[in-house]
Length: 311
Image (cartoon, rainbow, N blue to C red; front, side, top):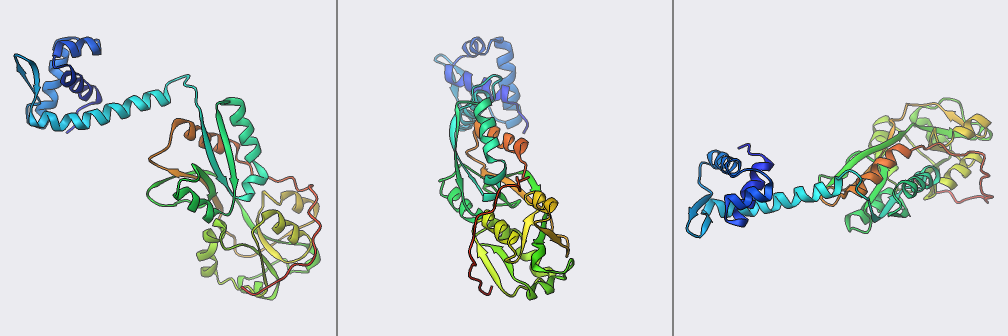
């Protein structure tokens, strides 16, 4: 079965008007063209759809069944044409969830770009750990999330926005060797993101395979604090090279070499069945604006000694 949208549209207009001639007028074509399209559908289905009578065209049982599907198909096509028409003004209010790294780096430029190019689109940003963002997306409290991960279920579209190179870093004052095996980390303090972070979910299985072992661990739900504590020598941490590039260049941090970490992919995640053209444009601009480089010259907050605990 391989009939076209034009054939299906012609059948629907004929069924609605009860006349091939009226359908031809509405579709700006000839009556013979309309009859030919209907005949082609009937040949493929192996059943008549419309019968001529004194009262006009009458639907057969097969025609009534097909009409229900044709109504849905034509309505969907009309929506697509409206949403994606050239020059279409994009509008809407979207709740966009991001993790802190995005909020610290390229979220504000993205919002500015959207405001400049599409003033009738408004963005409500929400910053949280990735797993909690997804929970809010599931109950429709968010429209789209940008977070680590490449697959969040069959009901969701996952579009790659960008990626970062994750590395282990430490302050030179911590006196950590330049190279550590995964099991050697147990001898040094480590600072980790909270377990609700999508980043932790992204790397958990890989770390287990590599044999990482941790002793003293301090957890924080703040990327800003994680960087600040690492700069001050509280422990080794895993951060993106892009985010700490200025710290590495200034000597505030240095890389601790070990097994190379897989790149962390950031994706825009949204429900596949509710994606309007405006939301797709927001995702498209997110791909263009994605830049995880951080201004490392910003002063780190003044901090006292934090409490450490075991994993």
